[in-house]
Structure formats: structure tokens, C-alpha cells
Amino acid sequence: MATMQLSGLASGLDWKSLVDQLMDIERAPIDRIEREQLVNTQQSNALKDLNTRLATLQTASTTLSDQSLFSGRTAASGTTGSTWNLAATSGTAAGSYAFNVTQLATKARREGAADITSGLNTTADVSGLTLATLRTASIPTAGTFTINGTAVTVATTDSLDTVFAAIATATGNDVTASYDPLTDRITLDSATDAEIVLGAANDTSNLLAVLKLANNGTGTLTSHGTLGSARTNSTFATAGLRTAITAVDGTGAGSFTLNGVNVAYNVNTDSISTVVKRINASGAGVTASYDAVNDRMTLANNTTGDLGMTVSESAGGLLGALGLTSGHTVVRGENAEFSVNNGGTIISTSNTLDATAHGITGLTVTADSTTAETITVGADTAKMKEKIDAFITAFNAVGLFIDEKTRVTSTNGKVTTNVLTNNREVQAWQRDLRSLGFSAIAGLGAVDRLDDLGIVTDRDGRLSVGDTTKLEAALTDSAADVEAFFTTATTGFAAKFKTRVTAMIDSGDGVQERLAATNSTLDRQIADLERRLVQQRELLTSGFIAMESAQSQIQQQSSAIANAFGTSSS
Image (tube, rainbow, N blue to C red; front, side):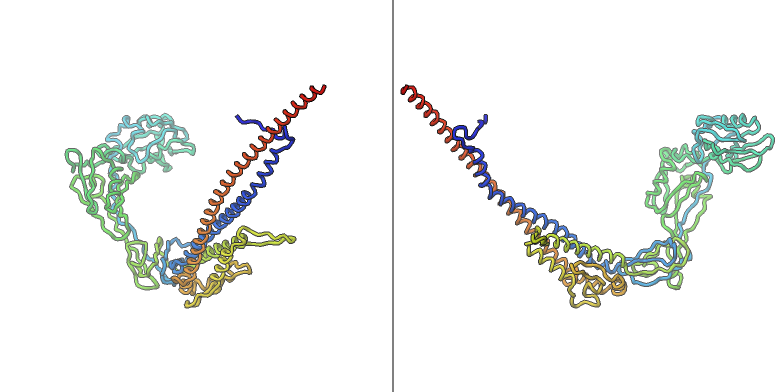
């Protein structure tokens, strides 16, 4: 338990305050060391910030050393609103190229026979067909549809026969509906031969569209197409195909080849959807699709051009049932036809016309219309200027930071320094950078200094593009000289900058390490001094406490003696 100490009870001396004052005096070396640490930390942080800006400058100068930057090309069409896709790689010969596309490449395809699926029913009795199970191109929805101004309400659980009865009831038995299994169509007939009017803006069921019924201004309406459609997610055995699939083994397995690639299927487990996916992923280079409206399968080459498509299977196979081996239509693909600079006709299987087609290295033209357009290839000056601007920004950021951190100001006779004012090395970096920025590079062409690019400096050493016309002209007309100025190995502008800035960064890192080591040493010195101060405080406190005890004893003895002598004399 701590003991309360009250100084001066015996001596009348406030020795506790005196100890505090003595300790404050003894602490002066620690305060000096802490101030030194603070300065070191501030310098280290400033150098760290400077190195960050130097790293940005290093990156910007490295970018300027990339040869592809100055050999980069752009391609543009002279046709307003052109939809052609253009690209030019580095080194593409600059100039104008007149392309005249007279024919676009198309894909070869095999369109299967229509109506490959049987009708909705084999008889006119549709009492067993519910809306939910109809094999139609789209799924009927519950709700209302209008006939002759009267709403008819249907549910997906209703049969077609129930719907027909509802139509008759809604029209007072004027309109009757029937299904013809031979044509796979539904007919609405007016007993009075009055015009039948279908639909209203507020109908909520799509049944009229599903049954392909539309107004024609007469008293008799018939579906404008067959109604039966394949169940694409049902197995082939239950999909409703008109033609049976017989070229399978006892398990229902069969196969066919498409462009020499074998595709297997099983009528008991596979559906149109699964076989379509299998074809598309097979590597045959063909895309399969099913058109529910026309009840038709289509195979199309993945690539354009007059290319063949071969199919093969045994009689009674799946392709035959899908109408792709008989009753089908073969549409040959077409090659693209074009000319360049009024030359002869060139043939290409693709609408993407690259050097293999037209012979112009690096230029790619993807045409999507049969038009004549002039393509201009030129230097990518926008990208060049973007990277030059980035360098200027990074250069100026370093200069501004060094100026700020080394600045000395005087106000009313009071001189104020900054954190790096006494750092001669950093001030030398500023001079080096300015020297590098404006000195000429010997042995180059028409461009051997930044001034040749219209880049100027102000009195504070900041860079800027003073003459944009001069810069544009140099990048456009003297791209090779600009490239040599920036990219020449070792002696080029970018190489020299990178080398010097790298040395600055390394030096800044070294100084930061030394300052950190110095502060660690100072931490140990502070710890040692703090221990000594604690010992001194304890010694002083013990001495003053002993003094108070001695004085207290003396006072007690003196009082006792005085009392004793006083009693004897009386």
C-alpha cells in the first residue's frame, strides 16, 4: 500500500515541489532528444512522400520508353455514321485505303421441314385436352379474352371442349368453335354469318394468340397455322413427333454424325433441348435451334462463307424425324466480296477483313454493310499526348513538393525553414531533374529536346505544352524522331530519366532507413535517461524524508528537554 507523503511537516520546506523542479531540469536532455526524433520522423515522412511522387515520375518516364506507344495507329472511316469496326496495330502503314464491299459473307444453314410434330389431337374430340397440357408453341395463360365484346374466362385446367362451350355461351350460341385433326387448326364460325370480332385491350389471357386466331372481317375465322408443336423438354418418345425414331437399339440409344462429329442420343432420356445443347457443344462447328412457331429445326454453320455441312445417320434416325434429311432446304453460305483502292475483287469467307484477306499489315476491317468507305490510318497521337501529359504532371508534382519542403521564408524579419530545408541532396535532385528535362540529347534526329515538341518551362521550372500545334505536328509528321528521342536505349530521354530517378528513390530509401535507425538509438537513450531520473527521484525523496524524520525527532527531544527544565526550575 502506497504511503502518503506530505512534504515540509517538520522542516517547513516544500521539498516535493523542489524534487519536481529538479527532475524537470534533469529531463532537459530527454526533451532535446525527443525534439530530434520528431525532426527525424518529419524528414522521413517527407522523403517517403517524395519517393511516392518520384515513383510516379519513374512510371511515367518508363511508359515513354515503350516503342509501341509511338508506332501506335488509329483507323477511322470517312463515312459519317459508319458501323464498320476498325482496328490498326502498331506499325500499320499510315495512309488512306478505299474499301468497297459489294457482298457480305453469310452462314450456310440447313432448314428442316416444317410441322415435324403431329397435331394437337387425332380426332375432333378435344374434351381430353387441357390448356395446361396443350403442345402449342407457347403456353396458354389463365384469364379473360374477348369475343364479340363479351369476356370469356378460362383456367389452365379447362379443356378445349370447355373453352368451346364458353365461347358459345358468351355469344348466345352464335359463334361455335371446332377442331380439325386433319389440318390441326381451330375454326370459329358465326351461325348468322356476322363478322366475328376478337380481342380487347384489357384481355388478360393469351389464348387467342396461342390458338393463332386473328380477325379477318368475316364470320369465319381459322387458325393461321398449325397448332401442334414439339415439347422441347419432353423425351423424344413423348415429344409428339410425327415420324417415329426407329434406328435405335433396345435401350433407345442412337447416334448421327454432323461434319464428321458423332452425336449420341437416347429417345427415352433425351429431348430436343438436350440434343440442341449437345450439338452446339460438340465441336461440329454448327448451331442447332428449334423454331416453335413454324415447328422446324435449323442447323447453321458457326462461321460465315460458302462452306459445306455434312450430316449422316441410318434410316429411321433422329435427324429424319426432325425433318433434317428429307423435306429440308439447304441455304448455301456466301463469301464476302470486296476491293481495295479500286483493285480487283477479293474473296473472303469472313466479314472480318484482315491482312490475310487484303494484304495490309495490321489493319482489320469488320464490315456489316455493302458500302464503299475510305479508311484512314494514322499515328495514335491522342494516346501519345496522354502519356506525355502524364509525364509532365508527374514531373511538376515532384518539383512542387521539393520546393514546398525546402522553402525558406522571411516575414517581418522572422526566418521560417521547412522540413527538408537543410537537405542539400534533395535540393540537388531538383536541379538534376530540371537539367535532364531541358538538355539536348546528342545523336538523334529532328527531335532532340522537349522544346522541339512545344514543351516549355516557366520560371519555377514547371513543364507545360506551350505550343499544341508544334506537338501535334511532331507526333504526326516526325513520329520516328519522337520515338527515337524517348525510347533510345541508355541515352534516350526516358532511359536517362529512369536511371536518375531510380537513384533518387534508392537514396531516399537509404536516408529513411538511417533516420529510422537513429530514432531507434535515441529511443534507447531516452529509456536509459528515464531510468536514471526515476532513480534520482527515489534518492532525493528518500533523503528529504530522512531529513524530515531527523528534524521531527530533534523537535520532539527539544520539546521534552524544555519541558523537563521548566519543571525543575519551578
